[in-house]
Length: 119
Image (cartoon, rainbow, N blue to C red; front, side, top):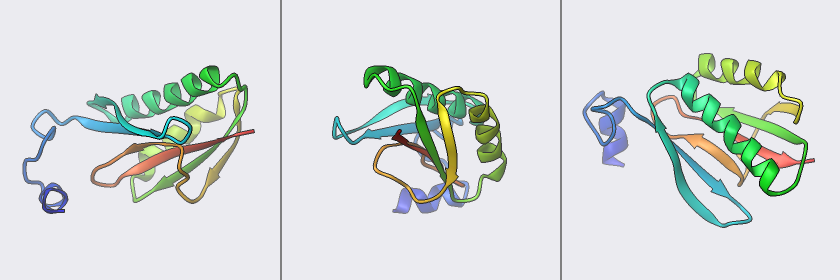
């Protein structure tokens, strides 16, 4: 928790020297939490989140997903993510809601997550 407090106060913590945003993923079926990548901008994080869902759709032989987006305050990044998702054929519905167990998440100041359920 101290690292989170340091991050909130603008102190240097892991990855902050390079201003990297860490994206993690938890896949219910695989039961494993892993780092999906580290990115320099929120736009790159959003692109990686979308690619994550597209890869999961292919891997599980599915063609539609409902997208659930939860945020702790980064409205600009979340709105940009929603705009990108509106153009995806596989995106059945975008829902502002609870965090589900299958997700791609940016953990940091003003965190947000992209969750999905197959339809």
